[in-house]
Each structure stands twice: as structure tokens, then as C-alpha cells.
Image 1 (spheres, one colour):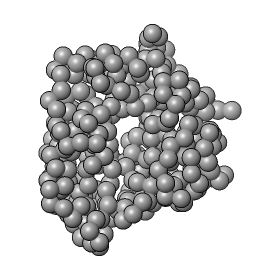
Image 2: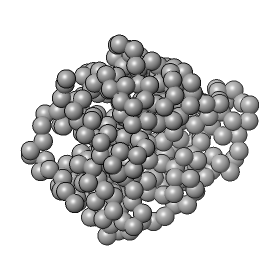
Image 3: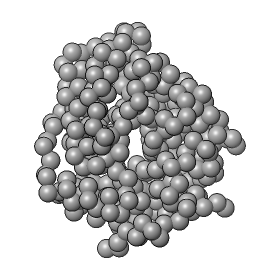
Image 4: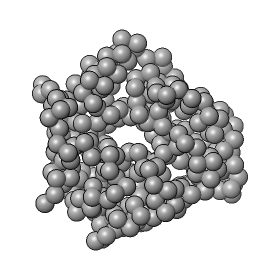
Length: 299
């Protein structure tokens, strides 16, 4: 197993945009998760702290939590948590909303316990045929109190991730973040996780020359500078505007490598880590991490 490079030996490019991946943690947050990250030569990591397709809220392992937190601090490895997929604050089902509150509160608490900088949550959809305005009012009612609970200095940011535009999505295009931020009073602990596959599928053509710059410019125009905290760097198996969330390896999809190179030169991405969520297992993940590192250094 290779070891992570000493942080003092990192290049300026690495410090601008650490590149890493979502890592498995079954069997140990620190032993398995960080071991996998080191094999990828990852400079940032994202983990689940609960079953992503369930409502369970496990307590975690204090020894693993401490080892994970200390290793990430020692190696200057930014860590992030991805909240479960079932969370939807726009649901018309009361039980789903109540479980969403409990699940997100758990992810935020666990994020602080393991030293995560942010917790990613999908922005959800307006179910039951209700207007978006009604669903957003419900987002405000139930999500804003969770943001207000983030009063510790080491609490993570809550990072909103837009969807690929399926169904009655509350947030898929860059401008959709505007009403979402308004509903949450543009809370100071609120940020954005931009998934390249999702915004491409939703209709932002990152593949055309200047497309990534235009998309990021629109994002800044909508929510202001400094809100982009994390990028999910994924190519897309489907074409632009297809509204299909199908990730591809970097350069092997319809987005292409040049879009990621352009993304890495935009002022808004300065200091923002990139996390891959691509297919191919460990070999594919390591190749994608290496490819993104090459792209951030220029042609």
C-alpha cells in the first residue's frame, strides 16, 4: 500500500484543488476508508456515515472516528460526508420529512465528530403534485432549524447538491439555487456541492468551449462568490440535457477532459476540492484521480 505524500511536498496546484474520491468505509472509517484513499493517492475524501439507502442513524466507532480525524488533520486531507439519498425535505409525506430531519441531523453531527468540512445533501423534489413554492416553504420550515444548530466552530457546512433534473426536482439548473438559498435565508453555513454530471444532464453544456466558465459564472451570479465548497467531478454517459444521472470516468463521457481543465482555472474553484464518484472500482478511481491531477497542471 502506498502512503499519502507529506503535505509539505504538495504542489501549488494540489493546494488549489485537492483531488480525491468517495471511499468505502465498511470495516472501519479510518482503517478501510483511509487505506483506500491512500491507494488512490487521494488528497481529499468523501464518506458515508450511514447506509445511503436507509434511515438508520448509527453511532459510529469512537476509536475509528478519532483515528480518521487525526489522520486527516495530520495529512491535511479535507474530508466530507455524503448524507443518505432518501432525504427529501420537499416530500408530501410527513414520515419522509420527519426521517429526513433525523437523518440529516445525524449526518451533520457525525460530520463534526470525524472532522468533516461539509455534509452533502441532495436538494430533493416537490412530490405529490404540489407547487415548488409549497415544497420550498417546507424546506425552510425543516432545514433552516438544522442550519441554526450549527453553532460550533468545527461544525461542517451544509452543502446543497442539485440533481440531474428528473421529475419534479427542486434544484437542477444553476439558477434554481436562488430560490433555495432564499428559502434558507442564505445561511452562513450553507454552501454548494456542484456535480458536473448532474448540471450537464440538467442542461448546462459543459462540453462546449466556455461552457464550464459560463456555468460557474451563472452560479456566482445566483448565490454570490464563495459558496462553492466542493465539486463532484464526474463525466456523463448521457448527453447534455438528457436528465439522466449516469456517471462516466473522466474523459470517457460526453463532458470530456477539456471541460474539467476549464473548470480548474475558474476563479470560483480556487481552493475547492474535487471528489470523483465514477465507475470502474479501485483501478478506475485511481486513474480518474491521476487524470484530474494532470488536468489541473495544464496541457
